[in-house]
Length: 375
Image (tube, rainbow, N blue to C red):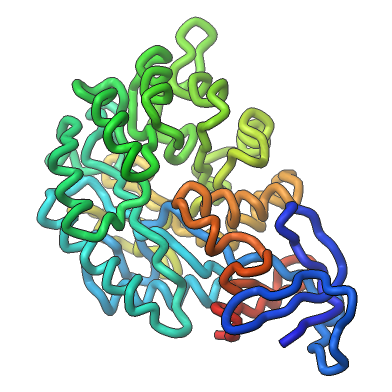
């Protein structure tokens, strides 16, 4: 099947007007010279890859840490409806038994791949190897020092479904953990009070990711630079950014893209089970988070995760002044790279799975396709 008269976000991260083919659930020819007479006319609509959320705890009352299959499936359907065609269910700082159950559930949904649902592209393991001082909304009762053997067993028992694992580099044994774990998946620096030197060492050992930039990490000081400059100056490191307009100021969003460049930024939601739900109290990793006015906080006022989905976050980024193409890349191809699935999803290119969104130029009125089928 061919689609014509589309404004296509192509694999070189530029928009071009033309046609594209979908065949057997994958993209065929992109911008063909000849278009069949029966091609579907999209009348100038914008076509972008399906969005990929590499850091999302939950939505519509589902939470990855619960390990409930039907809940996770409901969340996957919600995400698909909102233009997010792939995601990494993200767990909290919890015990290994709880994490193991959550990983099994994510693996089952990944393998089942039900129609109309976003694809599970792996798991993001946020915790428990974190600093107490920068624990944020993570449950302190389950914090622990880096434990590669325990992590490796979780991976082995669950078909290596963890694609991102987080760690605070100042903890004892962190450098050794990073060196070993980076051979199994992406290692991210997170929930850390680390100084510049410890962070630099983690990146030199193989960490290539920074979890929710600016949040739950040491800030930038001209005499004590901390984690962020260590990440910026290492070209292999990508950085996540929550773009709900609450966790990070719009000016700081623009600063982040200036520092890291469009090729190293990931937009994420960091959404909780309260995403898509009304204001109220919601459970988060054994604690209660209270959603009010679009922001979720613990009882002590600590900002927890977000209540805005990634598609809206992408629109926000554009509204905040991030170039359109850069915002789309940060919500599609870059997260696919962080999860190690860029050869399958994240771009509109021949042979890739045909996960895409057709919408107006302002990103409203969207139609979502997964494997070439409209949901």
